[in-house]
Length: 122
Image (cartoon, rainbow, N blue to C red; front, side, top):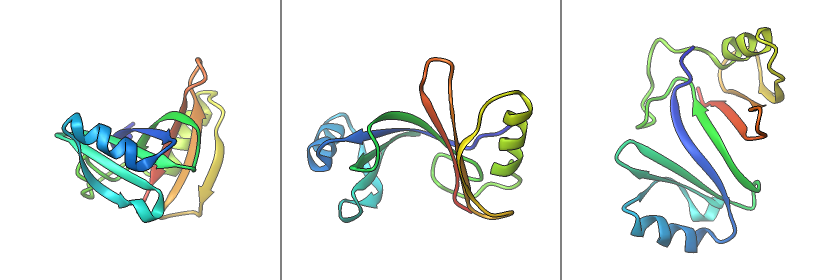
């Protein structure tokens, strides 16, 4: 199973303050906008998503069909195939979105309660 690009997504209190902090760590804004309350920060191949007012805490995020530069990769494991494999393994799937093809997403929770978002954009 190929999960695609990996990032850590953080629910932040103040996007501007968090941006300055991560810039001090060597990250640069790679995607998103402050007007939309999120920024994807990049340092080499490391991605950290900063999301204000969208969720609390932190989660792991995987983007099937993308590499660490948000470049399309082919072939890739479709989000629905990944979901089916996890469900067959007895892992509870939640917050499913999307249709029979194209963009889609779902969440699972690891045994320690950490949320994992599988979010396909194409």
